[in-house]
Amino acid sequence: MSRPDTVSPNRQMLLQEAADWLVLLDAGELSLSEQQALRHWCQASQEHERVWQAACELNRHFSRVPADLAKPILGRQRLSRRAVLKTLVGVGLLFPLGWTVARNKPWQPLLADYRSATGERRALTLADGSELTLNTETVLDVLFDSHQRLIRLYGGEVFVRTGKDTLRPFTLVTAQGGIQALGTEFAVRCLADVTHVTVTHHAVMVSPRSGGSPQRVEEGQQCLFTPHAIESIQNAHPDSLAWRRGELIVDNWRLDTFVQELARYRPGLLRCDADIADLRISGVFQTENTDQALDVLEQVFNLKINRFTDYWVSIGAASTQET
Amino acid sequence: MSSAELAQQVDFHGLYNDHHGWLRCWLRKSTGCSETAADLAQDTFVKVMQKQREDSGFAIGYPRRYLRIVAGSLMVDHFRRRAVEKAYADALMLLPEPASISAEEREIILETLQQLDKMLDAMPARMRQAFLLSRLDGLTYQQIADQLGVSLRSVKRYMQQAFVQCLDLIL
Image 1 (spheres, helix red, strand yellow):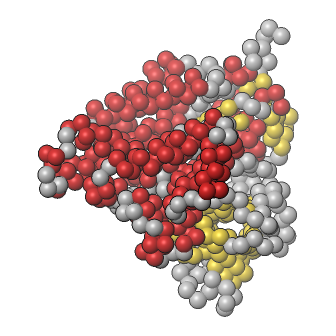
Image 2: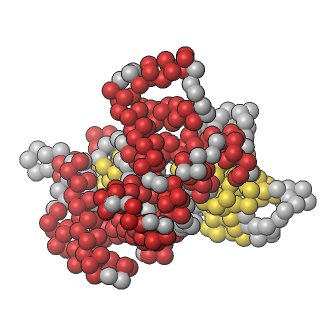
Image 3: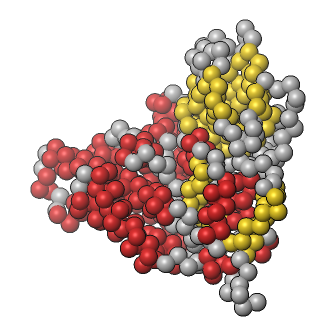
């Protein structure tokens, strides 16, 4: 459960680079210039050195266990953490969302087939048996014909469990590009100028609209993509789909990020003052009852909720008696 | 006093007194063992305390839900460790000469296995398969690609991501 502010892009970059070197090393002997480059890389900073030591340690770990002994143990059939937890306790794991949340202002075509209201969650079953769950403020078209099954997502967020149909491919398109399902469960969210995809079962093929090579996103992974490129594919944060249960799970989020996210589920304007924007919030909130969430902020986090009207709420620091 | 300081006042003792009994009871129901439940409840509160120490702005919305999530994660880890211990005991029994490994070596191997298992657990199934074929069976990336029926590029990507994840856990 790493905290968002400790995973600096620099650290991620170092890990990626170290991993690239390990992959290169696996391919065989390094050339002289490569050896030199690696030495340079290791000596670039203390942090580089520390990461490289860990990389070497990782390889030593494996040499420390007899392969014959380790194989049946490490290679055993396992349930996903999530499945284990579900059977045990029926709650999701706690991970911060890995992306910056931008408030989405979808262009909402008047003639769209399906839409959900602010704060609404809506389930649909399509003709081919595909199941859709629409999160708050979602607008989409369903365009099925004899050759293809196409969903056009204009805005919002949707979870898709595709029905079986081997003849007609299932594709969901957003302003940024297409996502082809390969017998799949996945979620798609439209952000300001990017699309976010999370795959929970099997895989999807993501194709940015204006070029960039299509890439497979596997079960348990998520990615962001723009019309031009696919950003790094990462492990999915299970809690990013907590909305399906009507929950917003946050772990050490900035208050302003949290407020932005909560605002999606609430009609009208919801904002927080800049001087408390970096306050940290953790907890599980009900998306269907944003008033309750505001009450919690008021009482537990000791903030002042200013309700100018129900549609204009502003969050500020509680005033102290001394001042 | 700043609002951050105000919000920080999660009274740890209050939290412990109000919810420790409930958490233990809940864990006992989930694990079916009161000793394990007591240990996990303790670990859960230690984690919360550490979080508070690391981050002065740390505050909790719904305490019981939050505790349940932290405890749930610890519980999954606990069961995973137990599964490794059991599989290890089974594997040792099958060795032709179990006596050839000293007790100390056994402990070291078990601890290393636990660490590796934790890393592997965070990986999607395919990536884990590729990673094991590479590290334990010593297959080349091309051989792994052939065996899994995927492209060499996919194997490289699996391996690269697997390395990143492992490093992330160690560091």
